[in-house]
Length: 175
Picture 1 (cartoon, rainbow, N blue to C red):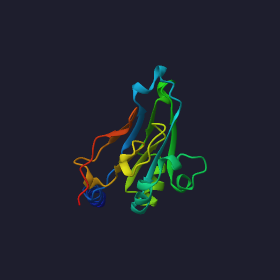
Picture 2: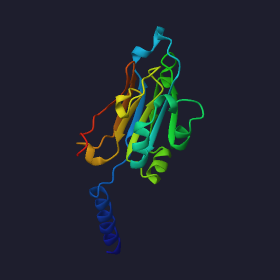
Picture 3: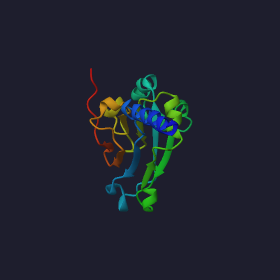
Picture 4: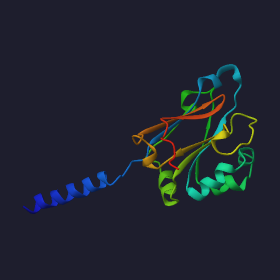
């Protein structure tokens, strides 16, 4: 009888966790559009995936991407990022990166109360500095479950000749 009671309590705890909105972190894949390969001579493309909270979002949304990618930039040094380099002319493993939902960087971002993933890319070059996602080198992915019709298990990021794209698309922010 005691075993049955323990199972009932365990079932209630699991149900509360699942119904309480606990969401696993999505797998984030980052790849280069095939149009960037071959004879294009594209060098390695540096990419930062950054988990940011609301105050960091305001600052990083407006920050110059040209300055961000300069060696020794203090803004870039101040964020917790996963940095990768992809190269379209190399092996498939060097054309795509997979950030697993279990990667330790998610814990760091959770501790910093990250509400957005910024995908920051040093491509196209040169780029015109613009705020937010008007700059083709920056994509801002919300981590708020309310912004999604269905919480994504996977977010696909593609670096194209024109900049950063991702899918699926979230719902528009409520005003």
